[in-house]
Figure 1 (cartoon, rainbow, N blue to C red):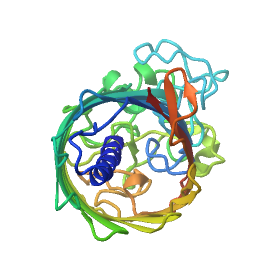
Figure 2: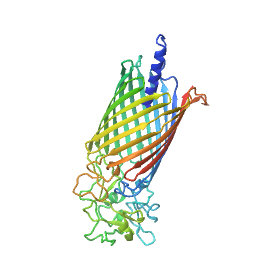
Figure 3: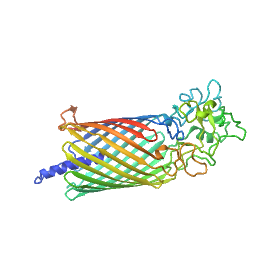
Figure 4: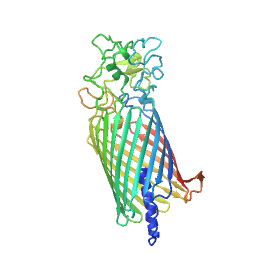
Length: 487
């Protein structure tokens, strides 16, 4: 997106220059000087429908994301862009991949070696407990996601044709992604009309992590007296300790196995059309065709079935309060993790209409309709009102509305049946609507008078947004950016 915006802004400058210098033989460079963007954001959310714990539990999460983008002119017609960033997050819900971690919900001190099993982990002094409402502190509690992207853009001599190619990688502790793509843009009708086509491919791979009890069940060769389960009391729905050599035993769903195909590939074709309707109005249309293949579910996300008995580890007294936030010390063993089809076809179709009212006010509107072959459909509508306050400051109040239907395979906690082939309790795939309210301010130094070494300050952006979802998830994000020009 940043590359596209840079190209559009540069192209606008070229058009203005050409109009004022139609008799000149000098051709202005697409980008005169190197530019550097520093952007950072802080995100925070909370809610009660964690997918890692089967659709209930804390969704508390914080994320800090610093990024840097360097855009360099290689010649009068060529630009190279380097984009790199990290995302450092802490997630209460993800931490409960292992809810029995000693420094988290359980509060005990025991050896968490899944292959060990020599210590009596569930003794009176060190009870093994957990809760979907209390964060644990396993390796999934915090993580760093990193990415790097390289993009090359070439303009024709008349600036009516633009070619772009790009490639990049990203990684976090359980996922790796490599992608590449390219695009072509054609401007005609005195640059009043623009048609674009882009394609991209992402070849991703899971380094799969699983809920502790499911992974450990196979590690223990399906024997509840071995490995992780040795010395741990398992409770039935009545709070009674089960006989691990009897018939009343916990186990995952029949036929349970870990994922075999750990690849996830995505292929995207994007088509766009933009038309200047008048001196004050511009309309843009777009459509994306997205095909995904491979393991499209998340192996971290538990699923519980309504037609199977329930088993727990922890304090029997809190079993009746399991779905309440008052439960801090009992955890229900999962029946399986999320299973979804291995293909998905997604199609978003959208439009943008920007209207210049006067030199102080512009209206930017956006609408998108989305549908896929998993049964989801969604509508997005937003409006932003840039308000100029003199030559240097611009305000950006904005609002976004979103609504979607659930996919065919979603059901809340314990509402799936074990006879189903596909299932998820991830509320991101449920039916909901959401509102986002935002505000931003931009400072622009047209002549880059402020200098930092050989870098002149071009602009400063500060933005804040509040997000509210009908499922109870609330989030806020604050971001800031600095753009410098290298003299």
